[in-house]
Image 1 (tube, rainbow, N blue to C red):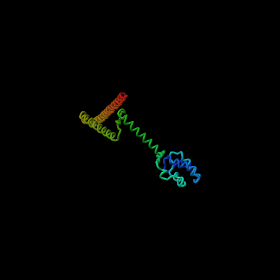
Image 2: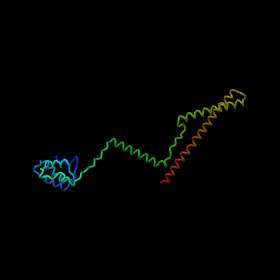
Image 3: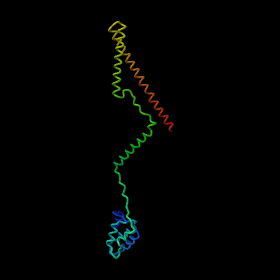
Image 4: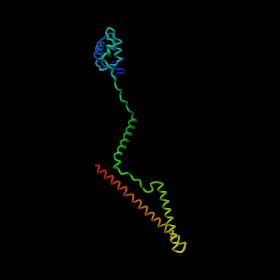
Length: 211
């Protein structure tokens, strides 16, 4: 049983089998001075291309000096056999993490490849930030106040300091300023749409040319 274990699962230093070692093992497998276990080991190792040094040394040590060769002569012409270690198995968590990193790398590479043909996302939407909202509100307030003052002054000059007509003129100027501000906002918003559409069409034409 020990001999089978030595062959199926060799451990330690391994030596390449040669004619001198084979001759020694051939005589050792029938040497009655050795135990049955050592004779079985010698018989099993005889046909192997490489043998454990420990097993061969045990057989040689238990053999009679008259029947065994000199130790230096036994190992002459033989070389050490080095086996490469088994690759280390990666844990499931590590495999999943490596897969995620690989997917992220592939996405980055894809974005690099298509960055010249993919239209840039436009974020020029009105009131897209708090700063824009505050600025627009202050601008409307100043415009309406200016319109009120202009209307008030105009009606005051026309109707000879009539308080009711002066207030009406101010309100009319305020409404006119609000309408003007609304019209300017519509024009400003609509002027940004052709830009984004032209970018999309130019990107599509580049893609067709590339194909």
